[in-house]
Amino acid sequence: MVSIPEYYEGKTVLITGATGFMGKVLLEKLLRSCPGVEAVYVLVRHKAGQNPQARIADMINCKLFDRVRDEQPDFAEKIVAVSSDLTQPELDLSKEDQEMLAGRINIVFHCAATIRFNEPLKDAIQLNVLATQKMVALAHRMKHLEVFLHVSTAYANCDRELIEEVIYPPPVDYKKLIDTLDWMDEKLVTLITPKLIGDRPNTYTYTKALAEYLVQQECGNLNVAIVRPSIVGASWKEPFPGWIDNYNGPSGIFIAAGKGILRTMRASNNAVADLVPVDVVINTTLAAAWYSGSQRHTRPKNILVYNCTTGGINPFRWGEVEYHVISTFKRNPLEQAFRRPNVNLTTNHLINQYWIAVSHKAPAFLYDLYLRMTGREPRMMRTITRLHKAMMVLEYFTSHSWVWNTDNVTMLMGQMSPEDKRAFNFDVRQLHWAEYMENYCMGTKKYVLNEELSGLPAARKHLNKLRNIRYTFNTVLVVLIWRVFIARSQMARNIWYFVVSLCFKFLSYFRASSTMRY
Image (cartoon, rainbow, N blue to C red):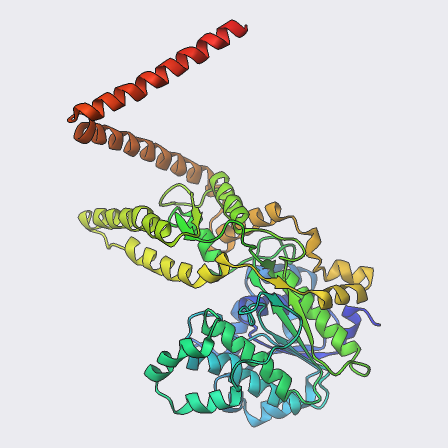
């Protein structure tokens, strides 16, 4: 078989979702590691008054593309922005663009999707299912198409404990569901949504499962592969460690913990946190398309599915995540932290609610009161409310563990040459979690919050100030408790004196035994 860069040489590629987190990394890696690629067409819609060309020009000016810019100064000439809206009929493509794509494209990477977990069902169907259906229809018209790669999620079948690398039939016929939702109003759809999604936690996982089945049913003779990543996090190695540019998924939670805003979270310390670095996902995706494209004449009839996960190969638990996040942000604090980083994980709902009231809402209320008194706009309660919504969405995933079969991923790795394994590495057995988590947290600081490392001394000084405030507050609290409760009750005073004398006797005994030993 040809190498991966050789396979992509002279090929014309189409990417949907290229302006999203994974899409950007896919575009950068493809252009950098496969310099012989002919052209990369990206479907982009107009947004905020910007046309697709302007959006792509802005996107490739970010730090993510610095490495490919140094290695290939003319890389941008290979990127062709095509005006399109995946929610519109015929993808809102002009007839000329449809014909052009049908005549030129060799490989399709369908990455576009809504990643909002709590999206209304109609919107999730529109973006995750119907858009996929339109892309499959467009792929059928492509005269030189070699492979159609669909990016799904490892949680599409999270109602199962063991998830194989197969496509599971959904509980409802997607065609009937689409027809039914078409005439229903929003209120009725909202009412029936819990019944429809069943044991799945949200509309995102439900519609991604429907999309997989749709691809299987409507692909016909197309050469299709599906990649299912779990929780996609910052980059491991490429284009550089710790790249992240959004608050989605765990990144926002890590930042909230580093700022001292997040103090408690409902999660199991022992549940597997199936984080997967974005460059691992992208390398798997490019390799999967290479394998299916290279084997298209002798390929099996079934669709190859790749569970791109880490939990079964190199498990990492939420308790460990919490430890590494907090220790990293204590050593390298975020600027203007609200409190010192400290998070309590618990599976108990009542304990979690208690700590939310004590550690989240009460300090936020007092801080907002202080802001009002100083003539400023209160904001902390709004921040806490948004944080709680994000935590509720993630609760299901931080409290459960799954077992994913990864035989196809292992097989794919076995088909690659040693050079390709180095250039397109997705062997997570080599992943050192402590180092990765430090780079991830520092990535949120540098690339999401845009904080310079030169500000670390001031941030550490601020954190020490917060520690002193905390000690002062605790001292004042103890004095108040003494004055209000203990000093006014003879029984409380007797108990207090007994405890103090017991401690004094223990210390005296310890000191005496230490003296006798020497």
